[in-house]
Length: 253
Image 1: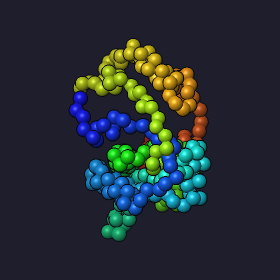
Image 2: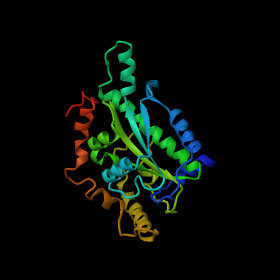
Image 3: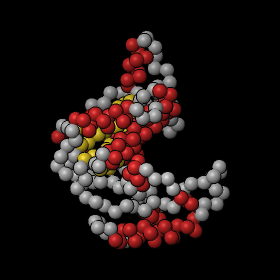
Image 4: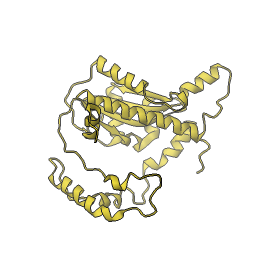
């Protein structure tokens, strides 16, 4: 396998959830913004915006939404937004209607821009000797977060990113083997599920031996747990929040 410094950082990725009480410098933040700005963008529409939250009330509100005590605590909190509002304004200023901006297709392109930028920034964070954790938990209550952030119509929060100087050194979490997730040309007619028990054992050993939050668990246990069991949560209101923002209005629900 090819090795270089970038790949080493990517292969050693670990989510960091404990940070030292230090914020990033202006130079560090500007560097991360520039990395996000140069990320691939679908159709050159650049439908992504970043909010750096320094207001303690807003950080506390996001922490409450996420139900994670490290969110908005030490370090810096970034919110990555799928932003179609800016392009809507451009069209309006030219005297045009919104065109396809309200379609699911264009919204998904904005989501792709936003997710790619988040990962690019995280790669840059780790290359700088810092750490971070991606926060899908900001969508625990999308409508409330939209209100907290004061977002206009046509803008939707996709991911958060808590970053800073690591104050922990967690073990590397084992991922699925390549033989279960990388294939040539065709999706397998029969997924090699007979490999799953071996992977479950690897995951079980990881949880048993890691330094923090030891437990007995496997990958298949988690897939068969409340994570995917039938239940109604605030996250099921995402479609309503999207429509409230004027997005994905052609989505068949």
